[in-house]
Image (cartoon, rainbow, N blue to C red):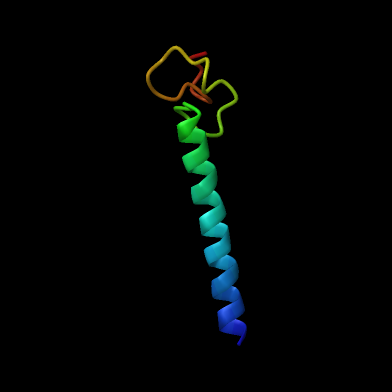
Length: 52
């Protein structure tokens, strides 16, 4: 029974992360998690790379 609960929790976390990524991509974010993802002029992610 414990294994079932652990598996269910892990699957719920994976589903939540996948849903977050899908929603962010539909909103046009290129670099998910970056506060400047919609405003970044570069084609890649500029967060943490000193290329603001």
